[in-house]
Length: 117
Image (cartoon, rainbow, N blue to C red; front, side):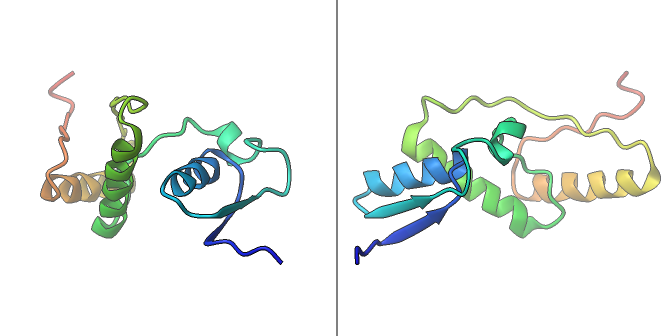
C-alpha cells in the first residue's frame, strides 16, 4: 500500500492548487475527486479570496491564504475589489460589523454612503 504525506479531497481549483503547492514543497500528495476535475464549486465561482465575513478570525484566515498564495506565485494574483450593498437594516449591520473588523485588521476599505452618490 502506498503512503502519502497528504491526501487532498476535491479536484477543484483549491484542491488542485493545494496539491501542486504541496508537491512543489516536496510532499507526496494524493488528489481524490469523485467526478471530473474542476466541475464542482470551481465551475460556479470566480475564484476569489474575499474578506466579507463576520468574525475577525475568518478575515484573518483569508489574509493568511492570500499571503500564502502571493508567496507561491504572485504573478497570478490580481487585486480587484468588491462592493456590498446594504438594502435592509439587518444587512447594513452585518456590512458595518465587517467593515469595522476589516479596518481593525488594516485592510484598505472605504465606506460609501448615500451622500457619496
